[in-house]
Image (cartoon, rainbow, N blue to C red; front, side, top):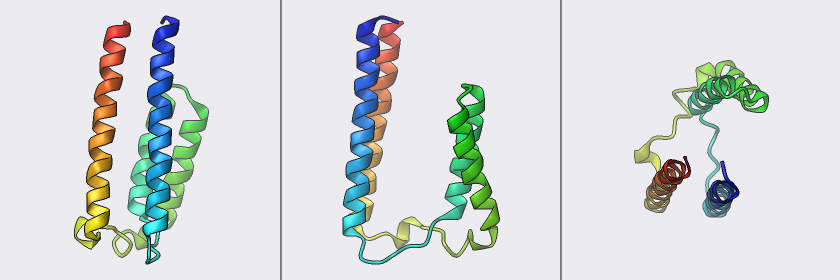
Length: 119
């Protein structure tokens, strides 16, 4: 891979991190009610990270996946009562999540296009 390709991929990764930080801060500021963690989602995320970490041989990723999976399993009885459903979100949260999904999809497509043109 050439230096231009690395810069492009690094820029995409940086944009993803900055967007995630902005969204996290906006959600944290706009929360008026405190929600309990969604342990079912934490378990699912942990399984995905664990598998991806093992496939790409990234010990930090699979270790975090293992930790999230264990936390999700320990709180198995709370899966149904702490589940965040679309109907439970406010209009503002729904709009924010839709915008986030669109931006992440566009970044995914941009990353795939960059990989195609780099190789």
